[in-house]
Amino acid sequence: MRLKADGPDPSVFVTSLSGLALLNIDRAAAERAAEWLAGEQLEDGAFGEGASGRLYRPAATGMGTRLLCAVDRERYAAQIAKAVDYLRGCQEKEGMQRGGFGEGRTGVFSTPSHPNREVTMGGPSITDTMFSATALRYAEVAPSDPLWREMVNYVHCCHNTPLINNRPDIQEYLADNRFRLSGDGGIFLTLDRFRRRPEAREALGQNLTPIISTGLATLQGMFIYLGAGLSHSSPEVTTTLDWLRQYYTVSEHARYADALKFDFDQSLHWPEGHPGLTVTDDPETRGSSVPATRLKSSRGFHFVDRGDTVEIVPDRHGDPSQAGLYLYLWLMAECLNELEIETLLTADDREHSWANEMASHLRSLQRPDGSWSNRNPQFMDNEPAHATSLVLNTLNVLAPRC
Image (cartoon, rainbow, N blue to C red; front, top):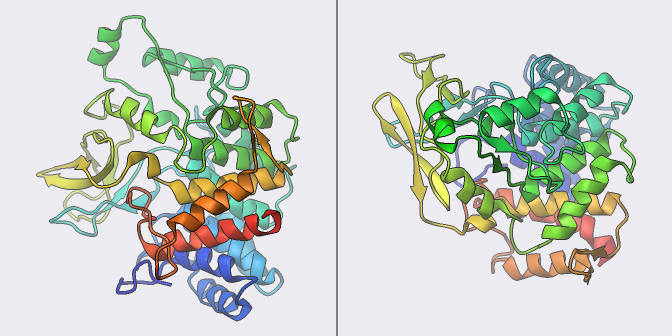
């Protein structure tokens, strides 16, 4: 399936999402998706986007493996095993972010003069780790496997409470950059975001800025904890669930707009030592770091060439609170369903029939042609094929509860 009706190459990620969504609706379509997908696996076991297969590998490998497992585990056993072996080699083996996935991941940041410019991004992230966990979980990699233990250790280092995140090296790193855990119990996307230039650190003196957790990262972390076999009553799971009770909403991506505003106000430039962006498809700059401004927008964003610099500039279209809404809702549905929570008691002592509330809101967003499309483009779910596949997967989780 293509991301757009008139788009270039079929998308591995969207084909996997749509095949999974159709599994119990149109089995033949799901089987065709899996058959096509199996032929797209790369020699090293990964799945990726684009003609080169280099793009967005953690997400594509995670969702591709999940679809193959769902359609016919025995038929695609060889492809599933290759994907798991690929992921074993991708996990960070040392350093502060040991156990995470996504180091050196490649994506496309379009600019007017380079519409298909590929860049290699920095360190691991909760999102890439969650998609990798998706592959491992549905491939039935046992929770006793060291891969899971290391993944849990990585999520700990992004868990926004000293109850869980108590490693001295993390505390020192954050304090050196004049940040601290807020203790809200949620999870943030990546440690790489919390670096400040020396002059910014000096200006703050000894004042430490509390970090804001976001809904999607928190749910992605919870998904990893559950996949690793942690008890529903473990501190890791209960603190993330308590965060959701505090900030529960199905109409927007919880706290994302707040975190963006916080992020934009910090620094205009990635400081020295920040992973930044690396151009991978330009012969003149291949492998070299590209200075880039920090995301400076309270809405979407796009990229503009400034000579040897890629500048991230505001895109004033789309409400920031809607960014990533459809993936956020799918993860919430999956986690609450697994926890067997019928109604969610929130911090204001209200009981929420979360499945009915979520289904009702999604119905209100459906377009006349039957599709969904996010008005905020930041997570690419403004493309109907992407958004509709995410929503159908969510509705498949909700249907037995509504």
